[in-house]
Amino acid sequence: TSPRIYYWGFTPDELLLFDAFLQELSAPQSLLIEPEHGHLTVQEILSSEQKAGEALIPNEKVMLFFNVPAEIIQKIMKEAKTRDVPRPIYAMVTKENVSWKFSDLVDHLKKEHAFVQKRLQEQKEKKHDH
Image (tube, rainbow, N blue to C red):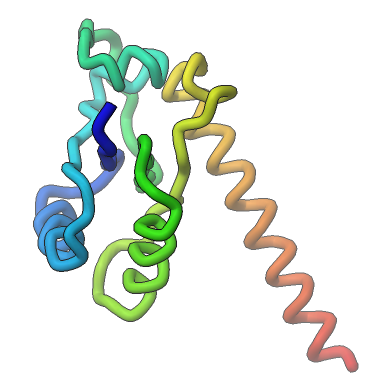
């Protein structure tokens, strides 16, 4: 199946910014995950046989890559740091998480992100102590 990039939790203005940025990089097609699809499994979102459910209110920006080549993902992540675009949590659809509810994936990503941020902060503090 063709590569796709999914947005979650972006405002309309942020979407316009990021879309223009992705087009510059010739990135694959991007799609929006709607709040009423937030409790579907990743597989259901990918298959687009989406049945609306209870809305999940986005409180985090996520960019989900599906079948996107690693070099394109790396290019997007690297280039985004030099641009005035939102900083999402980046994630890839994997064999493991494709069966998860999207809401569970977002929770997992937020915990992972917080853990990494904390580690980075601790490393910075250690450097200052020396």
